[in-house]
Length: 358
Image 1 (spheres, one colour):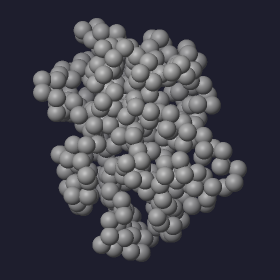
Image 2: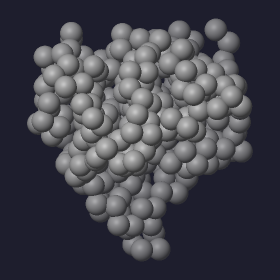
Image 3: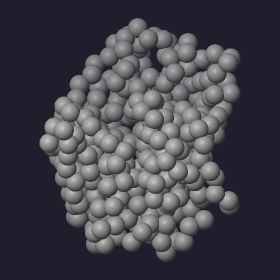
Image 4: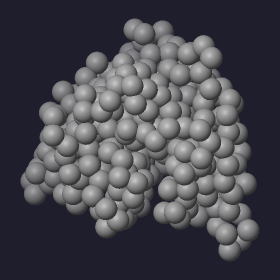
């Protein structure tokens, strides 16, 4: 298939669609647009299908990593390029493509800027076709590949405050991910990261091919519905994803705390209970389980049709809750590893693994 030149129109629809696929994990919509617009000004980023790249070539994941303690967040555009340079300087061959780690507002544009500057296409096969709370969930099952060594390059921090750091970690996926989070704390809260080089053939089998275009279709349908109001936006999203709006009503209470550096807790409304660990994790009606992560659970403001993240849901809101079965999503291999869901069970206090057919 011919490459797709990424444009401002595609950027807007991709970020809008990804806000739904975030499933409660929301970054700044405006910041995502800003990074995407910078990519468009710097070059001509293009999107290609997994079939369009050499299957023996290397593909690299582009992302940003945050720290539980954000006290001086600063991430220059140059940091994204420098993280890729560090990877290449440390023995990784020039990639045939770049991929994003997940589909949420910020995640879906990762790789655009690096690709525009370095002339490398973005591949429509992110690590996962929805958002997820842990980096291991977005590592395409590499933590299970015997002998795989993660190479993770990072850069970030404010040089004016003497917090700019860069480096490369080599080790297991779990160890490298943990070390980068510690480094993000040292940098003030956020780093640009280029990591986990794999062959395109591995990505084809273990990533989420087609997920970027799914987000674009979703965002396009929502934008077309916007003139008709919030209800039309919500129904458009449900239609594209073959999901169901299973609750409409008022949020009565929210209990929020921090666990593992992420917003956690539950929201309740009459007999309904919605738990979250950054992403919305479970939805119960009394004793009946209505949806379980990695099913997509997205909360909309009922009047405006805007997505409400787990950080922003508060008592008194009138909401519509959309549930999309996992079989209707494009999910990476990290969503098929039962052990990765166990930390979520402990934090939200709900069974998850027993509801999954993995």
